[in-house]
Image (cartoon, rainbow, N blue to C red; front, side, top):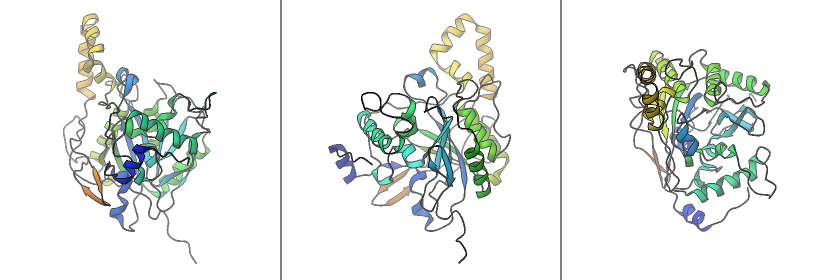
Amino acid sequence: MIPIYTAWEARLRGRCRSYVTVALLLVLFTHGAVVRASVALLMEEPFGMFGAMNPTGHAAVYLNQVCAESPTELRMCEPGEYGVVISRYHKIHKYDWVAIPLIPYLYAVEDATDIPATVDKAQVAVLREAYRREHLEALAPDNKKGMAPRGEWIQLVGSSYDRTIHGFQVTSTVEQDERFIAIFNDRNNVEHFNLLLHNCADFSRQVIDIYLPHVVRRSFIADLGLTTPKQVARSLVKYGKAHPEFEMSAFVIPQVPGTVKRSHAVRGVAESLIKSKKYLLPMVILGPALTGGVVIAYLADGRMTLPKSAIVFDINDAMIKLQSAAQVGQTGSEDSSVTGAAMPSLAPTVSSHPPPEQ
């Protein structure tokens, strides 16, 4: 990696006391135990101008035993690896999906010890550019001026600088991971992104369908037939309540503190229409009856209560303190509430396979 030595980085290296997700450092709790395979939906909050216009957010899938040989080729993880985040993107070198290792995906660095405690917009750009030059130039080559290109490649790394991420996880098996890898490595990886029919949430639904067939479905009531990140999460929560053997748990990866503008709540289609004044007021004026129908659709099939507590880890002299936790409750109301407490199995691979025979 091209070294980037600046005053802010030097200070942060000397006193990195940040809050980091369980996904990064739960290894300190495992002490050699075999980590169970899991698959987790990442429901990511919207941010920026596009997020204000379309508050449905972004969806990706985290697999803790699947890793990336390259951004477009998958393999089983080796000991010490944290797994991969995979999602569908728009205009990323004409690929349909891209897979990024967990830590770079969240923080645009390769080592958890390099995660900054706070960031501003300029620092985020430096971290992303350093990672791009080392690992992603094939997907996001320099522009004509030899500088970082504009475009959506920035969504591939440093996601936690832009937004808070809500995770919903179920257990899986090595056999399921191997099947998933075989399917995706063999599949023609050519872009066919479409905001209405082939978006990131549709992709997450397809990935989860390999592990849990027919569990995630579109909502023709609350989301007008579109697939949204919140609908995928709602489907998983509902399934987890009915099937406790999959040990569904919920977690939150907080947006990194700093001066970067904060992300905001994920919403479904009907929820966006009735909770955003820029949409609600014109609807009330032009179509009161339609507005009433949208409200009913949201109340009938669009509600979902996220956990008020979250798993947050404080890194302080290599000590990790569990401050709070959240798990999908085994009982609850019809609005897909998430309650309870448990620790998600987000950890680096310790041993994916038995040792070879001598």
